[in-house]
Image (cartoon, rainbow, N blue to C red; front, side, top):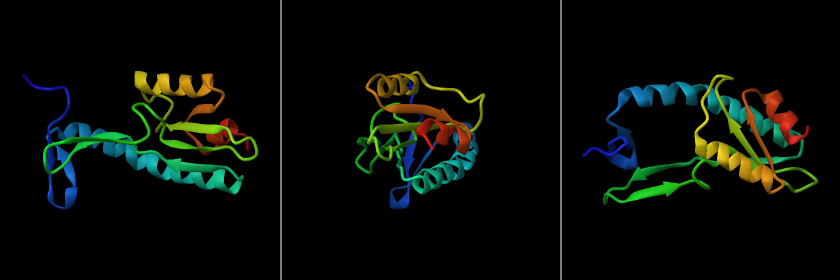
Length: 135
């Protein structure tokens, strides 16, 4: 029986690739847009006195075959940080466009942060992110 998880092949120097090139191609296209946008959001937030860090979340298989999870938590946002002056926890999910899909875990994460008094938002532009952060 095949798992829902794509098969992962470990390459030299710890790099990995999946056996499903179409998944990789779709993710690559999204990352090509998301990564520069995340950098710009981080720079804008820093210029306004806030602090944001990139939060990579995922799973990979090490050389011994052990699955290793990394990142803050399943569904946690792309950018996490601290709001200037208030010290509130910031959680910004960056999406490549308004039609991007959200995973249920991402919605649950954003609701958790919002419910605990933090600032949680989805941003498709620098302006959306800065409005959510507060400046």
